Amino acid sequence: MATELITLGGGCFWCVEATLNKLNGVSKVVSGYADGHIDNPTYEQICTGTTGHAEVIQITYDPEVISFHTLLEVFFTIHDPTTLNRQGADTGTQYRSTILYHTESQFEEAEKYIKELDMSDAWPNPIVTELKPLGTFYEAEDYHQNYFQLNPGNRYCQAVISPKLAKLKNNYKSYLKYK
View 1 (cartoon, rainbow, N blue to C red):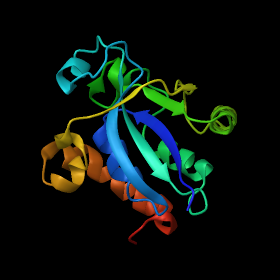
View 2 (cartoon, rainbow, N blue to C red):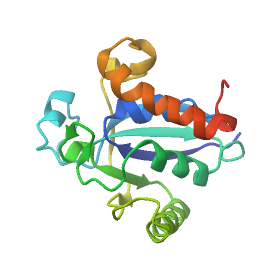
View 3 (cartoon, one colour):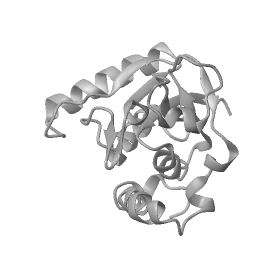
View 4 (cartoon, rainbow, N blue to C red):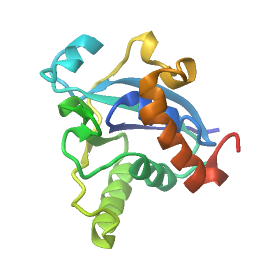
């Protein structure tokens, strides 16, 4: 099995991790930080919004099982790619919508898909998702990994993540590991 990596940011990494980790063909999802100007940042530093990092997830997936295009479709369904530096109540540059590609073909496919979404009026406002090559990825602290799975009763998880999971189940049931 030849796997590929992609790094995505769509607000709080707990949300993006919880949803994309449910997809068949996704073998690993790691929450982390990318694209900033300090080495080995901590969550506390990221939360200040001054490090330049985005909260992201790095996904290992099997393109024979799930296509990059399908990952993009799901990604653009589970967050609002039209709000600059904001997802719901989470505000700041660390919550920006970003695709940090690993290959030229990922860049080309993501760029094409974003243009298609904008032209289709799928969203009422233009997409502001940044598209750039991955710089350095830093794995987040252990307590951020698999956060929803380990804390399903958390109020944030119930209010923000659970509706995203319901949307995923309604729209992409055939792609889920467990129906």
